[in-house]
Image 1 (cartoon, rainbow, N blue to C red):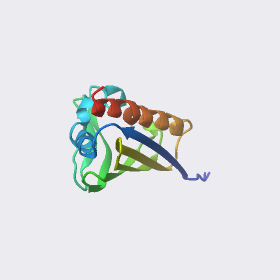
Image 2: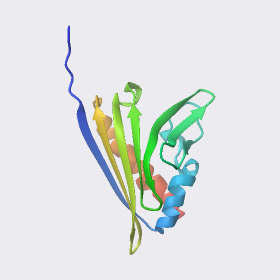
Image 3: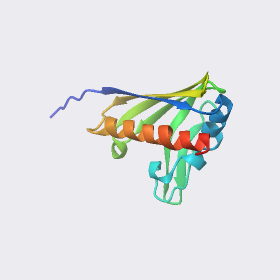
Length: 151
């Protein structure tokens, strides 16, 4: 029996004011993820940190003795301006779908405007959008922001 399915498109946006210069936010984003990306946001048991290779084609991934996950590859990177990723989510993480992630930074009077835009295309399971929205806001709006601001 043939079953037809429809690919869904979901968009999530997170906008944060960070009280730090763009150069500091950029450094923390690219080179210090293991210091602010906490274990609760890792997918491999025993994994201690997320790793980022900051060049086109570079990986956003984690690994441990218990396995590894490639979360995304970098599509473009413009120093202190933005970074774009293309990633995937298996059914175990709310998919199957692919994700496009765009992070932009802009200087403001009070520091840096950090914008995260996530688009998911594919078979997105029930509750995934709400869960991801909450997770991205916690990861960047709380953990990353607090880390960069030194709180």
